[in-house]
Amino acid sequence: MREINEKSQEGQEVEPQGMRVIYGDNRPQESRTGRCLAFAEAARQLGMAVRGQELVVPSFRSPPREVGRRRTLARHGDGSVTVSVMVRNRIWEAVLADMIEGVVAANQLDGIDAEVLRDQLWESLEGESARREAA
Image (tube, rainbow, N blue to C red; front, side, top):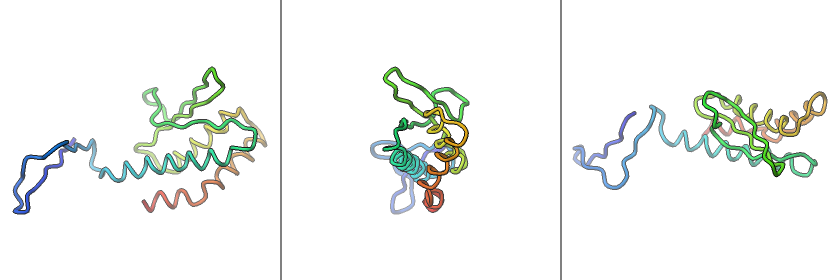
């Protein structure tokens, strides 16, 4: 971990005021924030694509509660489903694929129905990957 130290206009370190900012790796905070926002936007787009099709619209969260898992699915007593996807340190397209597979699994689809839904969901995310890479 590394700590960000503030510097005065003269270039000397000064005691930070308020909250210290500590990063867990060498990537800037903005990239993690951007990835979280992209995850939320992808979840919103997938939800919009599923609504109106008489399908379960799962909620999404990150990371999965089970350590070491990339994707988990939890079914709740009220019929709702939560798809948890690991976002950090993964290729963005793999994250999107796990989100789509989570929607398919939440609806217990297979065969041609699953293929059709996957295609529809990828189309709903068209350009999402490019937008994420640009961020």
